[in-house]
Every structure is written in C-alpha cells, then in structure tokens.
Length: 97
Figure 1 (cartoon, helix red, strand yellow):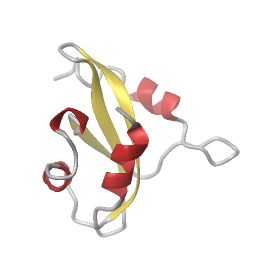
Figure 2 (cartoon, rainbow, N blue to C red):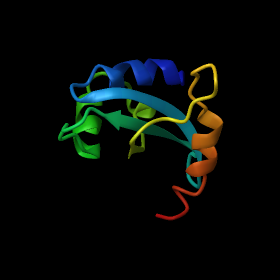
Figure 3 (cartoon, one colour):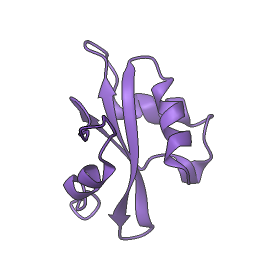
C-alpha cells in the first residue's frame, strides 16, 4: 500500500485540507491503514462520509480502517509531515477498541 495514493484520494474530497496515511499496529491485520485528516473550517465531514467517498475509489484493502480528525499535522522545520509522531500518538488505537 502506498500512503501517497490514499492521501491523494482523501485530499480530493470536498472539505479536506490535507491528510496523512499511516500504518498502526492492529491485532488482526498486523497494521491497520489509518488516515489523519485536517478538515476545512466549518466542513461537516465525519468518518462515515470519508469512508463512503473512498469506497469506489480505492480497493477494499487500501481503505482506511479508521479516520482521525486533527487540527493540523505535525511538521519538521522543512515542512514535512512527521508521520513517526502520528504513529507514536496512535500506536494503541486498535487495542483500545
């Protein structure tokens, strides 16, 4: 799975500013595809809306298991999204279910 492919599809959804796709430890799948999404101010997007928008765009195994909304994405001084921080932050996401 290429995160950039999934991010590109999510970023095209109306109301999305940007997204980051990460793999998070999952008890059944090894890693669960997880998307962290920044919404445009006032956008009425929820997890269900994004999942349904991706159903016809991505193969089932590429679709995120969870969508998490954030105010912004962590970046380094060069402006690159720090996915390692997101992976640490959500490492226990699927074990809390």
